[in-house]
Length: 112
Length: 119
Image (cartoon, rainbow over all chains, first blue to last red):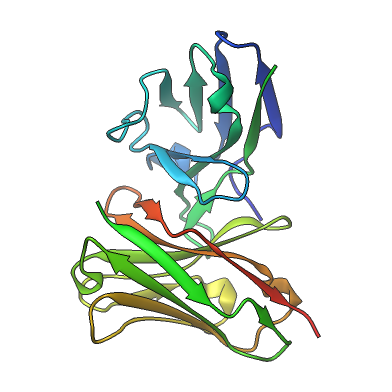
């Protein structure tokens, strides 16, 4: 069902930098729509982490950053911390899908 | 800061109607935009529908007109009804505040309600 593709998991040691790609197509990210990112801990609701490709809501640490290029986007966590272990989802809009809002498949970040 | 609290029945039989309510604290349900989203292991995150401050609603066509979102008269609650449920509707359901953008983004979210459809 998910239109935006993410790797199932990424991992890194504390202090390292990890990146999570979000691959779309010409009908969503490539059509110029922004990408938003959400963080979700087990058993809790997703939380907005990044909006409009690269903007952090108030309270989100600056070790989280994101970018968008072409038909893909990427979330980076610099200086990985144990508390960053969670699932991360990208979200955009698709002109060809009946559901309009599309989400990524989700990536589990594991801190080694 | 808006805070959302959801509640509703968590166990339904096939063909019954799902009914969930989302209490809005720190804001006005009728003065803002809201969305219902569900999450299941098989389908991931899926948009159900949204309602704007004018009461206009937009639904995911894949739900084949089974969903209804509304804001009640007290302006403190929004609700979701999904009729004729099947096992495929088993998921965690979330309400969330929607911010208009290109595209819109969502947050904060309610705590989620697990709805299981089983005979």
